[in-house]
Length: 284
Image (cartoon, rainbow, N blue to C red; front, side, top):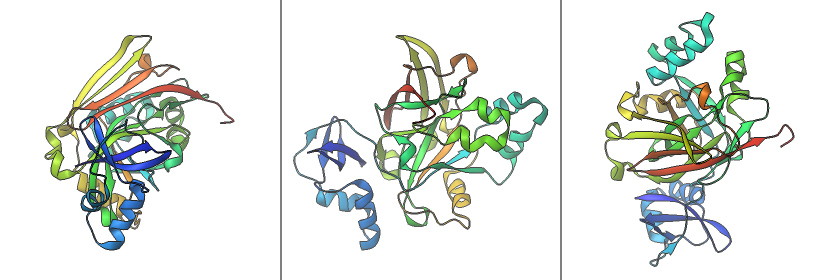
């Protein structure tokens, strides 16, 4: 099943997506339905299916859920760890250690406040000269870390700020428009084996492709379950939390984002996440 949200009758409404059409669930957001399913001990898919209209509408997907928390994982692909170590020079091996170690990097990415959905602008910090997309597979979690669905995400990051000092990580990662995700959640039973998936990322500027790269999800160095397990250690996150699993696609400084760029992340079995870019001012 493909679940998400649309703007329908003036409200953000949960929906089942079937091709180019959607069956809305009148009066309910996806987070409300997820919470209700948890309380009633039902599966989210069954509840949404029971409440969705029989007739479908033509509507574009909006942000699939308003998550109470968003968390990220880093250095889960060898390419990411190698790039970061090369950037830091004197800290050679700093990121490779995390890539090799049993304990992964897990960091707080924010809340729905910093998130946008398909078609909405992702942010470039006004005090950053090297903001880059980080295309990732993301997981929607239920209580106890149950995997409810997968989607695409962009862990937008001001790499030059983190490069100055790793202690600046939160300033690099958490700001207005720093996380995009969508277009929909695909349930595990429909998506099947995630390791056969291939993700692409493209940056287009003034109609010209500035950057294009791809990676297989089989290059992810840890299982999704391992990442979830470390997230939940002494940290019982609420149902509806979104976990980003790390990037294996590295945009170099030559492809640093500029206002008006369009970033497209895709996995055919999930869809496309396309976002324009805009500068976030200091007073935003």
